Image (cartoon, rainbow, N blue to C red; front, side, top):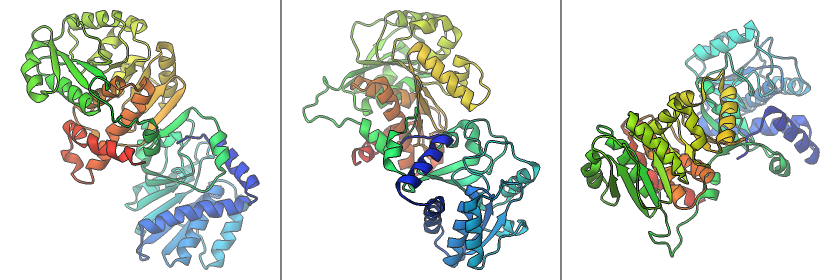
Length: 493
């Protein structure tokens, strides 16, 4: 699914109005009706009380339409027009009159909002470009301090689409129109966005298809388009051979999880290259794996005479001097289809001249601290994205920047993952991801395909699991356990 910036969304609105021979007021009615229908389905009890906060621009106009529709359906609803939140647009004024015609008079007072069960935020939309004045900040602070459920229409008020946000409504739900907006998924904006629903408001399909963008949201449909079903004639020799290099004394679990995840991701064979201390552990945990061993407690020399289809390296590896030298020698071997994770990334961060030795089209999978050590500090999320794109292009690698909403960067192209939840915040989750990515590479996916599909499957396991078990009890092994169901879900699309 494409992600648009504010100017692209406005252009799509304009073209849709022209091609569909409708007015901007009619498009506003359509969009707000879609939001109202979602709200109505979520809150079926008409005893639910609502308070709609409206700016005076077109986002506020959406709020006036929603308030009118709630009123007509018998809900208990009140509305506040926020002073200082823009100048009245024509569509706002038209819908203000329509709201008054059904007997609902908006006020400038929001003292009663705290008693409302649901607050609908339509103060500002995607057109916000200036800093908020003190009065609007006061209203947003008030909304954030209430215990009400908060629904933001299109974007949380105060959220900037192209720069760091200072203050915004801390929404429980964001009902955004037609296409995702990048800012909703960035780490710095997590406090303002808990759940996102993209509502199709019928904008011109040709315009959406023809608009060029470098930003995409990975959803079930995107994942299913990448996914390659197993051939009826497949055998272990056609499904690829993955090698997992990692583990050290006390950290063998990381390599074990990666090896099992690679096999469960669908590759035909897995070989684990580990220190001798992990031999019995690996053979017991995963009898399907073949095992090669190095020194006793940590890897000192990486040498093998087989030709794996892909390699995952770094999980539980340690950063001893001998291990660092072994990584350098490994890069000199010019391996292909390599996933570089954990301590292998940390070793690179300590030896940045080695970046020029990176296998081309590798996948790097840093978590936030590892990423910081790798590319340096960044001013805000937008600066981070630019640094990621620069790093990816300079080193010809794909980066999987792990976070609550993981981002895959391939040169100038950015894929934001939509699957996953807080259940994944558990030790070993990243080791499993590396195994999945390595298993996909072994099967013939290119590095971008493997990264986008693997990250989505990884998150999807948690989405499926929390319908059956508590997020608190979800572990890295649970990801592997639910991987089969995740595959089945994308195979149905």
